[in-house]
Image (cartoon, rainbow, N blue to C red):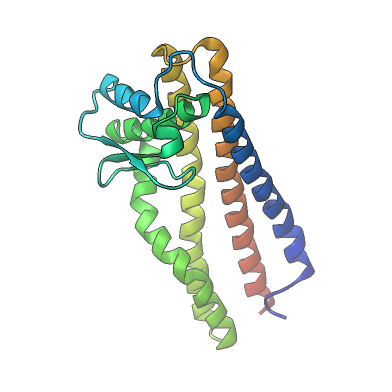
Length: 226
């Protein structure tokens, strides 16, 4: 009775549906734009390397990694990891994703404040998100309100991480599109294709933040019902 309430459906169902829709959109946009080759013929790996150098970044390695849409920038190891379909392809999708991840490396070099905040709270958020729900449930089962409260505080860290991720991702996409255009990697009529992929990807981060916030509200309501 403590873990379910009709209001939970009202809170979480729309966010879950939005999440599924966002995941569908990013996969669909990436698949569609992966079939459209750029006129420049340059690969995602080449775009990333050239953009790094144009921004005075020479200590970041561009490497191929396994997985689908597993592309990411590792600020600790100074590596820009691109999935095979991005690293080797010259499609609009590949160039958009490669430029976006390069945008994170540029943020890192320029000490972009939201990125610094995200990096700072990442260890806390990762640790807290793994313990939040178990502590909260243990607090209910053992009738120890203090554990519930600690669980909620831990979850707040995970929510904060999801929220601060939004400006980081939006800014990286903005940088990517600007440099793809100014650098001549994509023609004016090709930019929209890359934009569609990046906008769809951004939706997944918005959905994740929405789910996190609503889950926090749900925990607070459960805490109040207990």
